[in-house]
Image: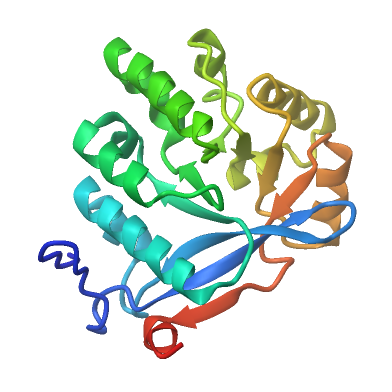
Length: 235
């Protein structure tokens, strides 16, 4: 687990996070990069899914704050998507930290948005309020990994966000069923007109995504950048 004495997150040891991967988010039609998603780089022996599943929300918030600080020090203009769980917005002590470090160039990507419907009513209403607060401060909030089943509860509770990412598994499953994919995109547009399709890996995927009604895409079709924290600290 990440060691976090105070706010000093331990990133140097090989068994921990040692850098970031910047995955481009691309306009499907112009092919211009409009933003990057910031993903942690782990040592090869680490299973990212298992590692982050056991990581406490407090450590995820600390990692988020650390990455914001690193990006700020680069003076590289642009917008960056950084991941956070639902709990980081719902719990007041975490939310206050986010307000301290976030800026308009930071986009919060709620990585477990598909679990929204499992929240209590109080937490659902709290999340709606917190998303509204962030957006009032010009901090964008996107909902990640939505599919045809997880998008509907956001309508019911009147959740508005700056954008929606369609889950790559949903895209792959529906890529041969154009009407169903278009329906999912239209459902997501009820939350926001800004839609990213994840999991675009080849020219066929690109064409399917273009015909779906979405505007943006993300996936291995576009090369990503790798940064080591050792390199960043020397800049």
